[in-house]
Amino acid sequence: MKILVINCGSSSIKYELFNMEEHTVLTSGVLERIGESNSKLKHKWRTVGSRLDEKIYEQKIKDHQQAFDLIHRAMRESKVMKDLSELAAVGHRVVHGGEAFKQPALIDDTVLEGVRKVTPLAPLHNPANLTGIEIAMKIMPNIPHVAVFDTAFHQTIPEYAFRYALPEDLYQSHGVRRYGFHGTSHYYVAKQAAHHLNESLHSLNLITLHLGNGASAAAIRQGECMDTSMGLTPLEGLIMGTRSGDIDPAIPFYLAKQTHLSFADIDNLLNKQSGLKGICGYNDMREIHLQAQNGNSSAQLAIEMYCYRIKKYLGAYCAVLGRVDAIVFTAGIGENADFIREKVCDGLDGLGICLDTEKNQWLGSDCTDISTAGSPVKILVVPTDEEWEIAQQTLSLVVSG
Ligand code: ADP
Image (tube, helix red, strand yellow):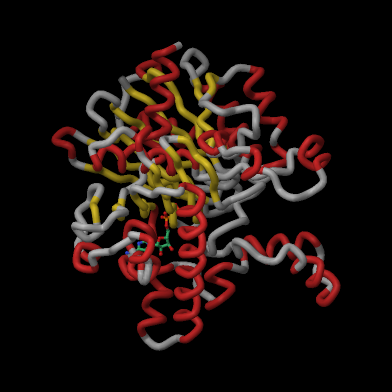
């Protein structure tokens, strides 16, 4: 059974085609810079003997329709499928599902309307997700399409944790509350952690740390999310590549008065010029690490601040959960940066979080336990796979009807 997963952004499209029985990726690709003169599609596919082939298409792609046409052509040329009708379903990543979508949804006009309705909450992402769905449904009209929402896993967060201390009307009339993001990743790594620990997810309390370019933490009690660090938007919480994470909410007003920056400028400042980039000028953790090792004091500070913020959330979520069975590191930084994991866990023995520094440096490609043998709280590194999780959720919805 084949399932295609599509993640359609405003200027890029990522896709992966899975053979579900074998858990293999048959083809995958990234098309970048839609709307620019130097658009590029990197298309990969598995050939006989499981070799991975790659072809780059470079040509101007003016819009999403052309982008989908090129992806379709690349799939035909690489002969990964005889016909699109071989697909059992298509899973679409949708960033914001608001309060309406607590589960994946089989896409019909009502679902499309529901996604459109919450667009003001994700003005950059949902319109692109919708465009992708609409074009894909035109190209593949007789195949079920499923929307899988980044926000859905966090819909179990209790009201005392998802509400902001603001006038109630802002919540009732404008939906101002914590939604949280990266839900597909938090859920996937939580399930993988439970599998690794040989326990049921419903018997475990976990803190999951998704540390990529965007970053978020989640407190998960017996399989249900209790709190997460991102809020109404992905700007809140941990320090990220270019996003500030938590700041005093009065800072934008102060800046507007002192510097005469517009709202749009401040939005851009907090989302694109802050975080690690704002502190040291670099947003890629590999470069920051190199700079720090070479004595760059801003890069050293960026790492200190980054880890300190994660530590504060770990402490808070230990209190939220009462008992923690495991902490899970995932995504680009969480999976690869041993120095970050070491700094985050340093001095947390009092909370039962004891890192084995040797295990921390030598990881396999699978789920790995990096805590000491006697550590009351396990520390796991779990590679995330959001596309596979979307494919699985799509499959279960299609199979269960
Ligand atoms: P995205 O959120 O775009 O999916 P990723 O999950 O790929 O991002 O994470 C990107 C981050 O992971 C970057 O900051 C990158 O520097 C960092 N990263 C990737 N590999 C390493 C590594 N070996 N050591 C340190 N950081 C790494």
